[in-house]
Length: 172
Image (cartoon, rainbow, N blue to C red; front, side, top):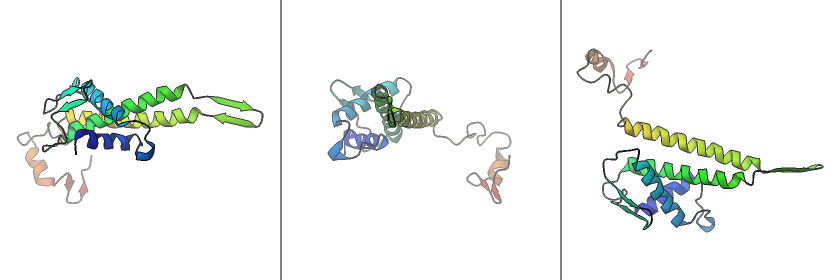
């Protein structure tokens, strides 16, 4: 499967656009948004590989979903693309956020924008968290501070097995 298929499917699930008979966004829109997200993210992140992104020709080289899958690139770009799409949907729907009352009847369309705003906030927070973890090298918290040759590390290694002591979690 190419990057268009795999990353497009991930983005569609993130934005809840998974019914192939009733897609809200075309495949081309999803693919170009992935490329725009890749272009924007490469400005802030130094990935292990250098990706050549051409939004105009809709190309991404090398394919991050190929033989040596770049899971960090795929995750960050898909989350960023989902943020871009939902942010665009919020801007579009905000013009329709109206409330009409006529006697006992009422129509309130403000909730649509609020629901999208919650989804947007959640996706963007996940993107920022993943970005922070990637920049930190996906390391365990404190590992860089307390390395194998740091004072006291022999005590931790004797009493710590995978983040737990024999009696339970660390006590702080």
